[in-house]
Figure 1 (cartoon, protein in one colour):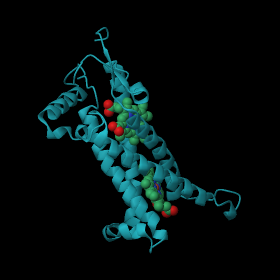
Figure 2 (spheres, rainbow, N blue to C red):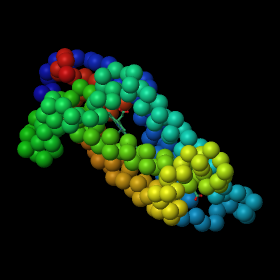
Figure 3 (tube, protein in one colour):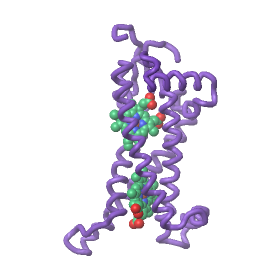
Figure 4 (tube, helix red, strand yellow):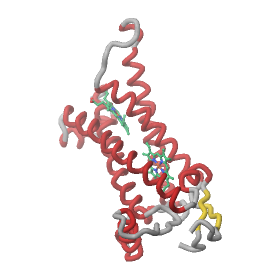
Length: 221
Ligand code: HEM
Ligand code: HEM
């Protein structure tokens, strides 16, 4: 209801917000440069312009940024507040979490009209984030395993040895490329859901990922 009193609450701590936007920017850069790596064509005035070399360099730089950001977020899930904590990402393990998931599913299936207010992450969203996280790990493992092929005696190649026994080089490229489309599928749905919740909950959902603050009817979760 639009005129209900609301409480202003600090939900997303700075590391959560920074990691979110760094991940987003690095994924956009990785996808654009990845497309060019997957379908290279002649750009630049001559081979010495080193155009594809620079594109690969940008891909690898963004890849390191993305990996550091992801590792930082995982560490923050152990030390951050309850909304950032790892438990929020496994709602299906508790009765309360399952109940919230059922309510949110009913809303998305148009069975219930009133959106169930969630203070931190919505439990269906966190289930999608956990799946996304698995895709991120696949992206990082296949990416670094492909990358390490330039130095077969190096430590990176040795520590990713299990990847070469599981995948062929082409299999890794395929998994790496295909997973990008899975991420695109997530992003379309994610932006739609964030927008929907912003409109329906009147809680400043989208701006909360910039400011950290949400407006909620409930005082406690
Ligand atoms: C969301 C993250 C990422 C996206 C969307 C992405 C996308 C892509 C795409 C589409 C390709 C072309 C694949 C092909 O068809 O051959 C590619 C290639 C590659 N990516 Fe990524 N990538 C990501 C993360 C990473 C990471 C974390 C690394 C780690 C270093 C990495 C390393 C590589 C390497 C080594 C190649 C092959 C380069 C070559 O053959 O010259 N990528 N990436
Ligand atoms: C590449 C694009 C994006 C990816 C991969 C992505 C991924 C994610 C992930 C993993 C989270 C959980 C954050 C955490 O706890 O660490 C999240 C939360 C959130 N994102 Fe994004 N995001 C993307 C783009 C966007 C954009 C463009 C918007 C704004 C329209 C947005 C709005 C939000 C909001 C409002 C939340 C908190 C929602 C909630 O779960 O309660 N995201 N996003």
